Length: 388
Image 1 (tube, rainbow, N blue to C red):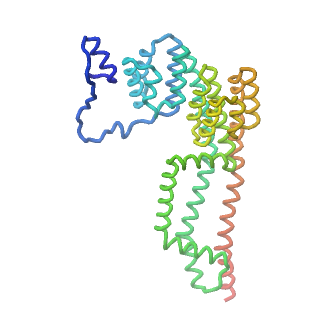
Image 2 (cartoon, rainbow, N blue to C red):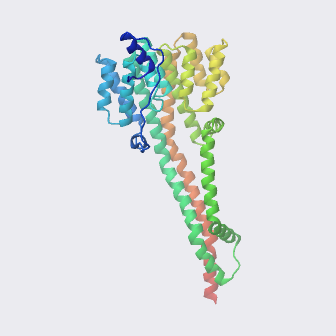
Image 3 (cartoon, rainbow, N blue to C red):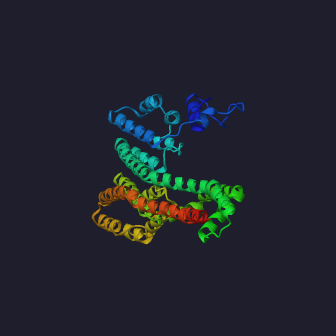
């Protein structure tokens, strides 16, 4: 019998008048041919997820049953991976699962926060409103990430160009000048000797240097995949020059927005903090928010538990305190989220203006070193040649 779960098999057998004793999964034996669908499966982008959420909100508003809506979207969605996931969710619903549980089987598409909000919508009967809120949140989050990438694109190109230029100069340009200097046999300034020594080392040991870069990159990548390495990196990101404050404000805006949405939907505080902590995408802040949850479990107030974390500034703490006293913490945190989102927008717009002077000074420094180390001796040698 084909079914989505052993429970669905048992239900069908019992309806047919049979009592199952043991139900086991049997997989068809397939060849070892490469599954190209998995290799080239399309990634579900934030735009795809926003579009899916918007369509679900519209269909729910129109009174279309969830199953009918999912079957229709599975056929109209252009993303193959998302279409297959929607179809699997529909099959699980037909097998008796709820929508949130069915979505949780696809964690690479639907985050823990997304699934938790869907579960809230099912519990409270406000699924349409939850989809609308998710669309707003996903659009805002995507806009912030796009702005940050756009602000860092130009500096990244400049840094890459400078590194490439230095490598080419060390490997090809300076060795040519070294042969010219050797023919004259004159004394060279200390800057030129340092450049020649660095170039000679690069030319003779470039395989070793390349190997060190590759091994270092792979080691860093492995370290960031570990729990401790990711924790340290997420903590260090908040202290980065120029970008650290932007990252922290963006995360705090996300926290305030998700916290307000969850409280407004009627989610208990403990469950809210658990879900929101996982959705911050920062292990360091996640650990602090989970510590806040521990304080609430001990009977502390929200404001006292938040102050112990040390991650919230005076504005957030004031809003949490006032909201706790007036019973409108969700409304005030929504205002906090809006304030931080506007601050992040302004900071991102100013980021390029702050980075450009640093890039200009860096490029000027590289040109100055080359002028002092290469061209100045050439001018001296030209004067010697003219006198001869």
